[in-house]
Every structure is written in C-alpha cells, then in structure tokens.
Length: 78
Image (tube, rainbow, N blue to C red):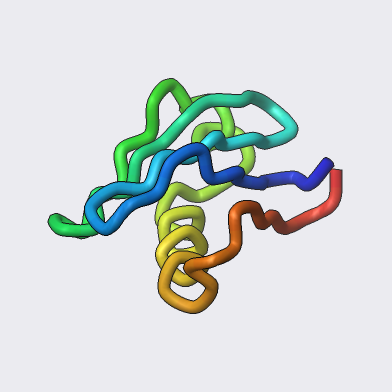
C-alpha cells in the first residue's frame, strides 16, 4: 500500500468522487470541477499527523489535469 493513494469511484464532467487511503485512515472525497473545490469526508488524522492538506490537494488536481483517465494513483511508501 502507498502512504497516500486514491481510487476513482465516480467521474463525470462536473464531479469526481474518490476513495482516499493513507497509512492512518480511509475515507472519501469529492472534487467539484466546476467550482474548483475538494471536499474531504472524515479524512482528518492524516492531515493532522502525516500529510499536508495543500500538498494532497495539489496532487489530486495535478492527477486530474494531467492524467484524467487514471482511476488510481498514489505516492510514498507504506
């Protein structure tokens, strides 16, 4: 398992729903493409202890922009 990873659960032209996984927890997130917002649902421990939320958001936006067809990605070692 990666230290941080995501898997796309749903994707259309307006929204992308993700399953978010880290070494500390597992949760979901939604990327609102129209309003350029990411909403994390219950993914708090990782942001408090190991990851910086801004870094994760930049990673998710870059993945969506550069590799929109990819349905999963991750980084780090776990």
